[in-house]
Length: 145
Image (cartoon, rainbow, N blue to C red; front, side, top):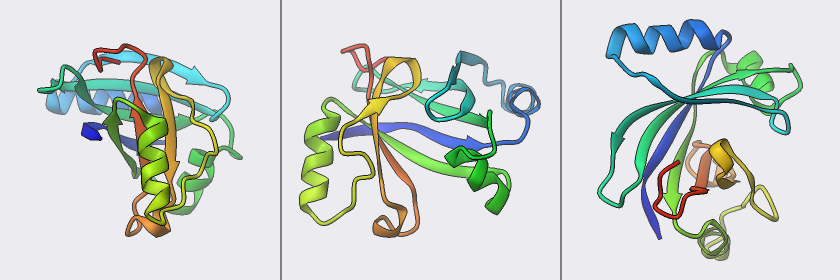
């Protein structure tokens, strides 16, 4: 069962400049940074708030590390902006299967490693009214990233 908005992914050309904008404008601080070589991104997670299920909600800022990454291609086509929305779940495998059974294309046969050791998969945007949708199971069983 989907329990919260885990994060909203925002694609950007300059991660440091974008982080500074969110810090200076809204007071959001960086909770975590990493480079995901598999996905070809450098990212910063900005924690927004805690949630009632013990998890948290974040903004995920994504800068491509290579032009041929999914985010790099998306930026070239669309420019900076909202890239995807992610919903938290205790069991990404079960929820992805249940959603697949409803006719929505799941982009990965098996979930992959996401931010902070989470397990993730994506749903095809054409099946989700134009919105690239991610399902996330946090590495920490409490739902905290």
